[in-house]
Length: 76
Image: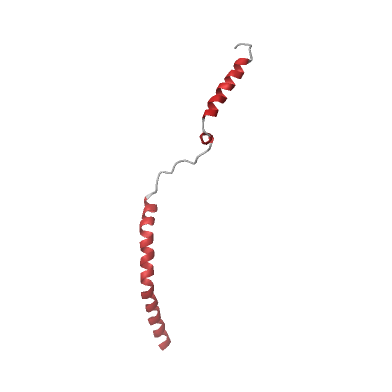
């Protein structure tokens, strides 16, 4: 190693110059990429709204059935 300390400063300047050319986002941490939706997530997204609509469609039927049962219960 030379006894001249300028080689250390030159090395530091070279590293800093390379570092400064990177964008600010290059040093920012990013979470690992998602592998994509799994099978259950896809099924939930597809069939969830359908099940919800079906439940809302059957609500009047269940209310009528409950009223019939309540009427039979009051007769006894």
